[in-house]
Length: 149
Ligand code: FES
Image 1 (cartoon, rainbow, N blue to C red):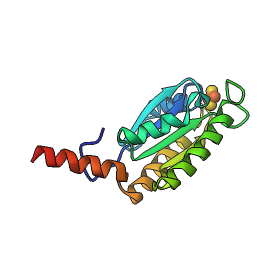
Image 2: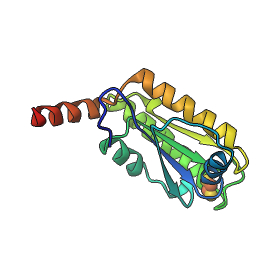
Image 3: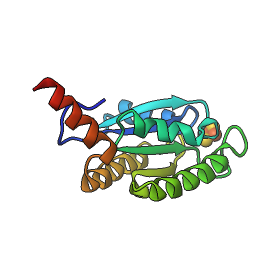
Image 4: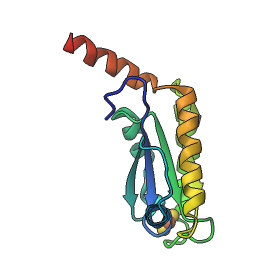
């Protein structure tokens, strides 16, 4: 996922109705956010299982952002509340596994909150940059470099 040893990658799961629409609006407004982010559109954050977050880390993400509708505004009633519980559970799991829980975060935005979404993305990227590449990826990158040399 990331060929540069020093740079990090954040996967952002964005629900179609609010967060993805806000990301789309950010593009229309020409708002900038770091290129380290890979946006993955999902029908609702409630669709995201804990395994999705763990798989993202396993496949090279250094951080995972879950962006859903504001609480009380999920288009599938309580999907974002389910996601919130899963994110909290996954954060505990990450901590027990030796990964910083700050690498996983959930935010809530409306479709009109393009600026807030880009601010959340920038903050997440900055947080993960401070933490550095995921230890899972460091080992993978070292192996890849050893194979190349
Ligand atoms: Fe946006 Fe459920 S539709 S979080």
